[in-house]
Amino acid sequence: YIDFMLDYPHEQKALQKRIQHLLCNLGYAEDGGRRAVLNCVYLVVLNFPEAELVSKWGGLIFVAASARLPQETDPTAHQMLHVLIKKLLTRVGVAGRQRLLQLILPWVQSPKRVLHTALAECLGLFAEVAESGDALLQ
Image (cartoon, rainbow, N blue to C red; front, side, top):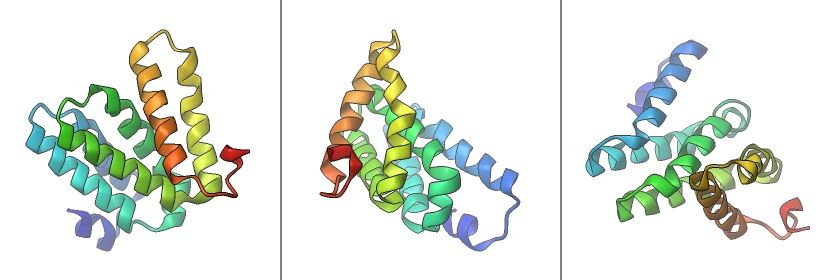
């Protein structure tokens, strides 16, 4: 599937629908299905051009994966979410990380505790991938 997404020319809307379809299935009922979707999304993060991740897909993938963190009951899938998010944070660079952080910081004001949990977990992942020159450390 990832080869199809990478190698076959797609219109922007079609590619967006495919990525959104994957992200909607992060909450699939069966553990094995969620793991398969996480593998596919990880390959998107790993193989899509960095510029596209930063400008088009990074925010969408990051918010969907981050929001899934506190809801994931399968330990393997939960760990896969960590790996996925850390890879995305690494691939988008310092400026991209800053933009992604801005997407989730408003969650602190949400009345939903699940978003507070997701934010706290994400902040830990940001700390793990932060480089010494990151503005996040300043």
